[in-house]
Image 1 (cartoon, rainbow, N blue to C red):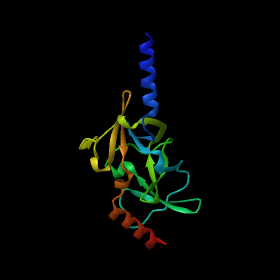
Image 2: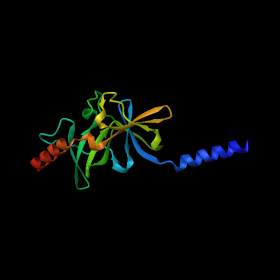
Image 3: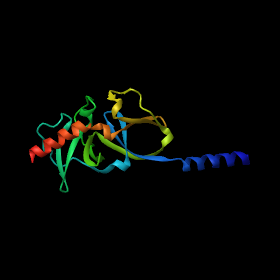
Length: 172
């Protein structure tokens, strides 16, 4: 019995010592997605109107002025080619850093912030629920849940980022 207690204590210690990943979880339709909290700056309700940007990619809804900073807003549902009902009361904008620049991700709802062991993350399958694998950093198993982890650096390709920057400059 004493050995069982020591083994359980050792297992708990190993879990504490294991590297943890902290994620912001959000929903697009019925699916849960996550991004590393280190890339998330803040979460905002889309209270203000968007300013449309001429010649922007179709998934860019426009830009907002957030405390003097112009931030492009990307509708992840359009970006991933998901057909979903209109945004609702719980919709939010998660402001993240993508290649050093702020980008707002429009999502259906922010679910929670969680910590998971890095070992719970597996490489993404080639196609995951209609989301191209290039946008994925992995899939995390958390209890009964599967959480798709996004690779934000791939969510906007360098060419699309350049198009967006040129459209913003052309609009100024």
